[in-house]
Length: 469
Image (cartoon, rainbow, N blue to C red; front, side, top):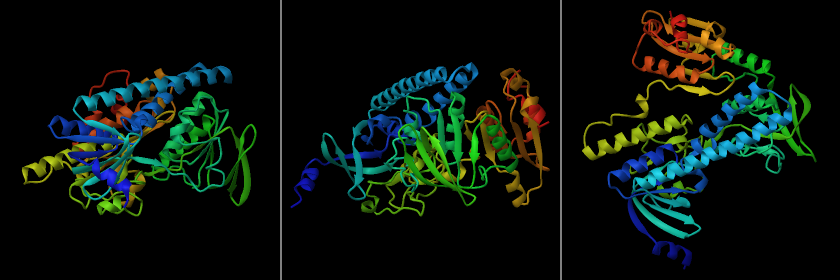
């Protein structure tokens, strides 16, 4: 007899909702369901992740560092002074995440949610095993929601696992000492953001990327503008690279790589692995609930985020979609709509993954790059009749005030309808401006309407007067 299994069964209880993972969708849904009077438990494996990836190891702490890095760059000084400011920035980031973790826990518990620290795995389609320091527990839920997020992909490089100088985007933000020489493996958005942060802090930054095309999914003209400016700022970009091995030496690490058929080396006192993220599904035992994964290792769902088991939903990064916290928040809205429709027993849900509208995103570089909609290359491939509106950032008064004049604004506009097909903004505060474009696209507001609006001055938004006029 498996006495351990019997002990788990003795501790079984039942609730209406089990939410696995304290991410944006999970915590918001938990509060909503608990306020309705439904018995809801929220299971989180790591107490340092209360609130999810965004507030602990991604959006919020990284943007805290981004802000500190820009301030540090403006001050200049010797490397020792920059290193001291960097250490203070890390301390400030820690204070911020600690504060937000506490507020997130306080909020969900205040709504009546029971938060359990432990590792969750399926026993069947209704039962969850929770393993924790307090002992194992079995919980049966009428509905189960998986919101376990994503984790870093570690490439198969000799020495990457054993090196004491290799960091992920998460562990890098716990590094107290500013590296003099930072090598970033991976030329994706996360790698580029960290390159900008650490270059501003005062590190010498080199990016090693495997492809020859720089940010290949972006508009080619914009990609060229971004690449040229990053190099102008002092960031070295090595393309077409195959990293073979990492060797730790006494004071630094040696990275061995191939480029153009030639063996090369570079040294670093910190190495950031930024080769992508994948759905965090290990240890969930999804097969016991009758669930399988997609080819990319995600949990397959329908347009209401329901799995093939009707009472099990998946939300956020674990579904394999765009890995943004605002997508996770919208996932909550979609699941909420599905539950409301289910309760009515008729009609269709008001929200789904098919009616999200245009989805914007921003990459926090120097300056920031933001995009929504299609590129010029995509417009051509789709046979669109379009025109291109462009404006150099140096022509914007607010950019001159900020003394940040590098960059380009580019918008793809459909001929005839004058509707915006895509916008690509490489400029200060583009992360704010892009939301107005997203709204215009969703509401089918023509470009000339944005061009004719009265905007406050001096602002970056008023650039739409000249750009779209």
